[in-house]
Image (cartoon, rainbow over all chains, first blue to last red; front, top):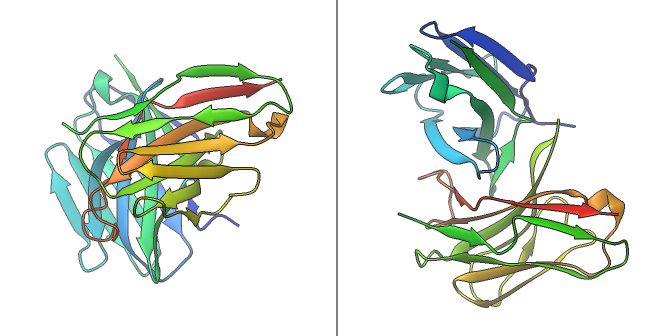
Length: 112
Length: 116
């Protein structure tokens, strides 16, 4: 049973528009959430994170929103650029186990 | 920059063969991890290590073992490869055990293993 779910396997967005990637979780013990980005033939790289004491964290074009009551987080990319085309993984940690639990990933395609 | 190097990018092995996947990191990180990535399943933790000669099972350790004889090197071993172990294997390291603080894992480029 997946504790972290990314229900959209892929998403296509026009260059310059906003990309919104979604992630849902089931474990209320999770208190730290991360987004990683993965290009083909490369390992994932850390993008942005958020602690459960916050509801928003920004880093340049990337903003992560956390809705704890809904157990939902989203990654917004504004404006979307061709180099943003990649697979995005949502991950969560918390409780007594410090390990990350990963979603299945969403493939983002930015159309020129 | 942190560099995590995985020895083989692509491997093709036969069922029953012993497979070694090597990983080396150059940032003196204490913590190292082996994941496998499969379509629709995300990353799943196989084994991890917080110190030399120390290892702990992750979520899917069956069919795998690991070795950490030196701080910078963490090896994944498939004692008898099977077709269901065909996957992308990712090694990672981190400077902190508690990923709640920094959350940052540094990954290698991955080793794609095909078992025939």
